Amino acid sequence: TQSTWDSTLATYQKRWAPREESLVTILYGSQLGNTKTEAEKFAAALSEKFPWIKVVAKPVAQYNFDHISTETFVFIFMSTYTEGKPPVAAENFCRELEEWA
Image (cartoon, rainbow, N blue to C red; front, side, top):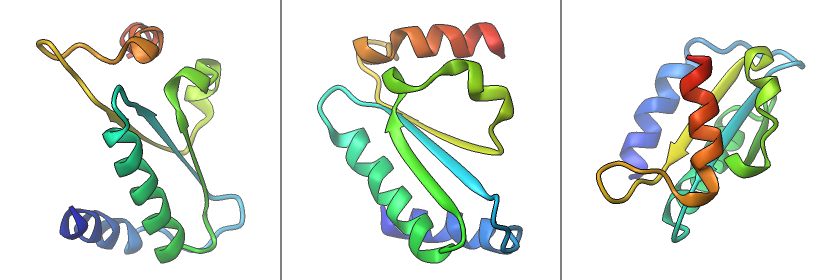
């Protein structure tokens, strides 16, 4: 919801000072598209509140997991179904994340 995004953004706005190299990666795993929509809303809100930050949103299936340890900020939006299973397209990413953590 909008109030949740505003609250989250207000928290980070106090911490982030303008820097050219700032990058936020938003990854999403979505079966029906709802999670993708929420991730894109969050990306747009970040871009609006922090115009000096480069925001990249993409599906987890297109993400090169080898880059995860070099990321500064990563937000992951993941839909689930049947007792918390990720979407089919996100299974490999979730497996890699679990092994990495």
